Image 1 (tube, rainbow, N blue to C red):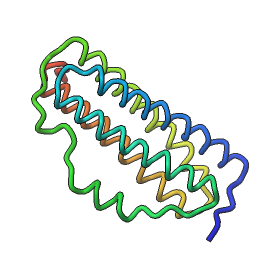
Image 2 (image 1 turned 180 degrees about the vertical axis):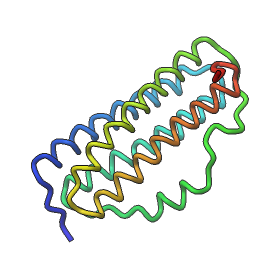
Image 3 (image 1 turned 135 degrees about the vertical axis):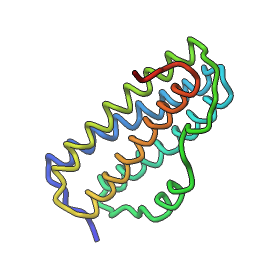
Image 4 (image 1 turned 30 degrees about the vertical axis):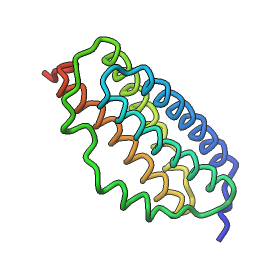
Length: 153
């Protein structure tokens, strides 16, 4: 069944597509720059998920109804960043701070897109993506906390 998107939905989804591309580019670049091998692995994994988000958004914009089945099963198998004990490297801390700020922003922009969705299947896909964005933020937060980069008061 083809999705009929309103002009507003298309514009919001095109914005989300750009945001996902920024996330992909940053995670890939930061994975190369990170000193800690665990952080490299975390960033590379998130880059792959961001690519899936990008692909899902492209499908929606092409009028297709995305299938979220495989992504949901994959998601349930991981607890991001919880057991990572990275180093307190200043360069890695800067990368983490930037990605945490980016994830906060991107997750927030999904709120608007979700509220503008007319079709339940599109709303569910965007909810799933937003949940993963929040989990990326959680993973980075946990990594930073466990590495001594961030101490919540």
